[in-house]
Amino acid sequence: MTLSRRLALVAMVACLAGPATESLAQTPSQSLSIRGEVKTPLTVSVDDLKAFPADQIGSFTVTRKVDGQERSSTVRGVRLSALVERAGLAPTGRHEWKHLAVIASATDGYRVAFSWPELINTEVGPGVLVVFERDGQPLDAGEGRIALVSARDVRAGPRHVKWLNTIELRLL
Image (cartoon, rainbow, N blue to C red; front, side, top):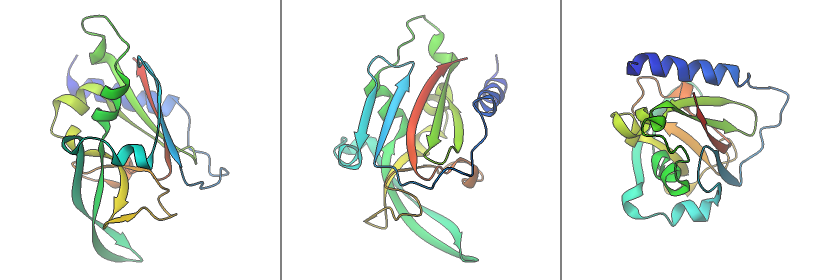
């Protein structure tokens, strides 16, 4: 199965997971749970994220529109793949890892999807960060204490998850 077909399947899984619910409060996330097809489910705090080894933490400058004006800022966070690797992949079959979807969910119900091969085998992967800092400061209430950004997407907005609180791995 080609990578583009696999990514289309991942997007479909995310849609089947259900739409975001606008009635849920925009609650800042205080911790992040990694669960599903992992050996050891994890819950990490901002302090836990900051304690990851330096080679697993990334930063980059993003330009976004704020109040109609473009503004640049530098974000810092842990690679999503490093978090998943810390929890360990549960599938034991030789090729099962190729069929994993990684779904990031926010406290308000917003969800985005990646395929595991996309995170570890494409140029997109190293740019997918679980962010805890912007311009040297903790994230503000508008993003929650923990967020997710995909820096190498052509359009980063659709896979920017504010108030990130869950990463779930599912076999397709």
